[in-house]
Length: 312
Ligand SMILES: [Fe+2]
Ligand SMILES: [Fe+2]
Image 1 (cartoon, rainbow, N blue to C red):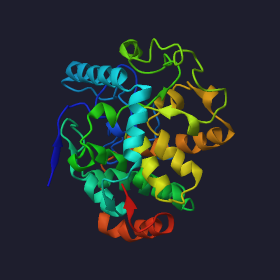
Image 2 (cartoon, rainbow, N blue to C red):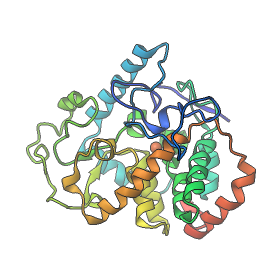
Image 3 (cartoon, rainbow, N blue to C red):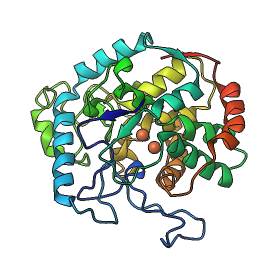
Image 4 (cartoon, protein in one colour):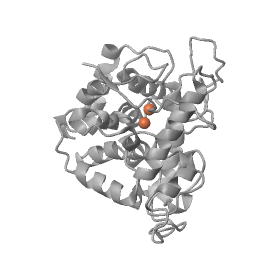
């Protein structure tokens, strides 16, 4: 069964500034795009950035992106995130293994994406295989790449069928002022937290160096997958969980905002997130992955770091 998600602006659109790894596939390895020697090209990134290629319906897409962020910025409030975290912390939606979830993600098709004609599982495996090639000994990183987008199942009916603005797009902290580095910052003016004196100073409710673990991030596929992994006793190293949780935190890892909230461990983990981002970009290349061929390897990693069945 294929489920077509409406609201045509999930992680696929172009915008004024940059490019997000998941949104474009300009790194067409068999298509003559010049790659640097290490095989990767890491342009500036942001969840809905300007692509290198121009789309016919470019301005239409930009409008859709802007409308997406308008909704996201208005609706993602501190209270909303708190409620969503509580709701999904119950993990009462399903019981399944990691691989099963990878296959389930195939049912999510973003029909607005002109490039994504491959199943989602291939996107996951492409990034995982690319990282594996360059970091053969970091098996945790291969698995991290495989699972990083699994939280997008939140778009499916059995997981709440959340609207796009509650699942994808750049993420940002709540409980402190919205940094100007956030894309389409102006729409935060309509967010209920914007005029709340407890939340609208640079630090808000957080002391300097509080650690991102203690920061309320906007809700989406990143935070949900982190929650699932952690609550099910996943043994990935903290850098792996950090990547899962903050890979859409573009204001931080692309723009350098919110660093005053980070602690020492966050800074260490950020190095790995920056590495990971390059491969997330690569992963929409046209290189096909033979799923059945690589499956045994990833099954062995899943066995190493996850229980057989997880609560979702
Ligand atoms: Fe991704
Ligand atoms: Fe993602």
